[in-house]
Amino acid sequence: MTEPRVCILYTGGTIGMRRTSQGFAPASGYLAQQMAGLAEFKNPALPDYDILEFDPLLDSSNMTPADWLKIARRIEAEYDRFTGFVVIHGTDTMAYTASALAFLLDGLNKPVVLTGSQIPLCEVRSDAVENLITALLIAGNYPVPEVCLYFGGRLLRGCRSTKVSASGLSAFDSPNYPLLGTAGIDLQMNWGAILPPPPESSRLVIENTCYPLVGVLKLFPGIQAWMAASFLRPPLQAAVLEAFGVGSAPDHDAALIAAFAQADAQGIVILDVTQCRQGLVNLGSYSTSAPLLNAGVVGGLDLTTEAALTKLFYLFGRGYTSQQVKAQLQTNLRGELTPARPAWQRHSGA
Ligand code: ASP
Image (cartoon, rainbow, N blue to C red; front, top):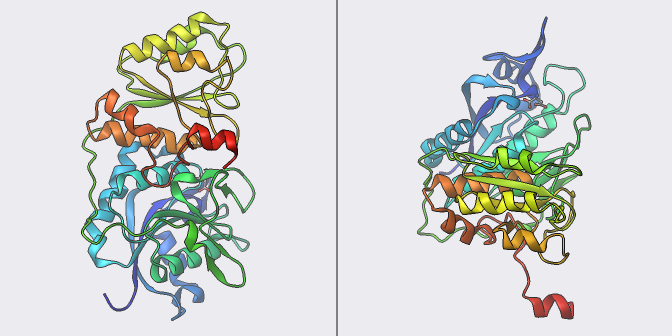
């Protein structure tokens, strides 16, 4: 491939919506028509691009795991024809899709940049043009071999991203990992934080063949054992447990802990992440989290909820058993977590 060429996969979201009597809604062909009317998108400094529009276009609140796989398979189908990919997506669940794609696209060696906007492109004041232009430039010109998310001047690792603002134009953050790049006067890539390319011999493969049933359970003061037990039962295969602080749960409630142990005995994997924006889970560091370890719960270190959920989806989707899934959860597969340091390093501060 000599000249860069980018594939834009347009899945929906605010960026391409138009005003209707029911409020903003996506409309087929409308985004491409808007882009064709703007001089910015004809600038020769931009890489050439093709727009592949999904049907139906979705508000990302309606995205499901089947859509994650649909996007991944489309990237696989177009992989050899393009230098990089821009996935236009609604902001509401963009961090989930970015995390899912990071796991699904095994052996990825090209940039896949998710972007969108908080204000539609058709509005006079919009963040759409800058987000889309910069995402195109990154996908066409920078050999970033990973799934990332570009929004509001910041390039984030997809499986570290989370939506932090419903109304601000800097809507995403990567609380436990440095930015992969910033777009100020210059586009500056933080190459030291970007994954190395996969081995020459590796090829893009998507191993997922099924749709495992995974979910999220958030702890709150006063949660009852029966609430947890009614969620944690087959056919559920795994749950992300959003716990307090460094992973704690109310250990005074023996029935609640028993509900976790009972789920584990049924092969339901429970992955403990923190409700805090920043920091990591360390099960056993408080007496309120030690019983979770005995109940079979696995500590999720500094995984976001989005990455934890999609990692469980990915691993069970490959047909792994509960034990095989558990063995992979604290292993860094795509840069989604910071591996635990050995105890001697933590104590010496090394
Ligand atoms: N509801 C929209 C969506 O996620 C919000 C957005 O795109 O900003 O599709």
